[in-house]
Image 1 (tube, rainbow, N blue to C red):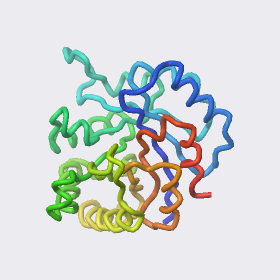
Image 2 (image 1 turned 180 degrees about the vertical axis):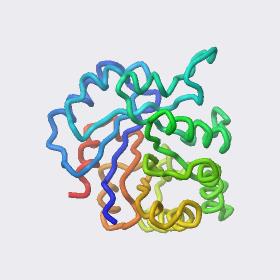
Image 3 (image 1 turned 30 degrees about the horizontal axis):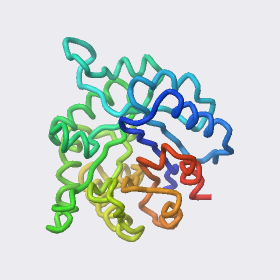
Image 4 (image 1 turned 60 degrees about the vertical axis):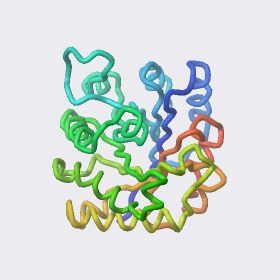
Length: 248
């Protein structure tokens, strides 16, 4: 099955109106491939601005988080309905920083994923192991545990994209090789086949999220289970366009 190549840019808590304007304008001027889906994840204060100024048909916008309620006394949280009202169709959930810094459990992330999908959002679901877990040989165990919390609640995965992000490769200068990524992505897909069925598993896109950049993106080109990238720091730089074009 042909899966559409997907490149997400997670800006995290970085950027200003000026710098994000530069990123959006660079993309607006770029000759982007028509067969690549691009999603930008600016900080929440700049979501509406990014939606309004994006001119590329293949580019859409994602929030970096949302809550599992439509509205209420939840100071500081973001409703999925508010995102849709702004024209934001995607949300990133389960990012390692949400899991480690903000102590979000597998079950909480799964519940947010289910609720976001029910409200009409599409989800970039992040999974991945720490350096200690990798050293202990627990990569697959951790990934399947994080996925199982979601597969127990969600049976229709057409609006979920998985981002495998080895936590030890984010902002450390370390990175999994393309062969390493292919191996774990293949194992993730095999788990999905047992949990949600072979057809859905084959259709689900699995992104590599461990410090992808313009230099290493091309090395993933022929890896059949690597369907794109969730890019961190490099999404803030002009090289983001090169990553988007890395399958050409």
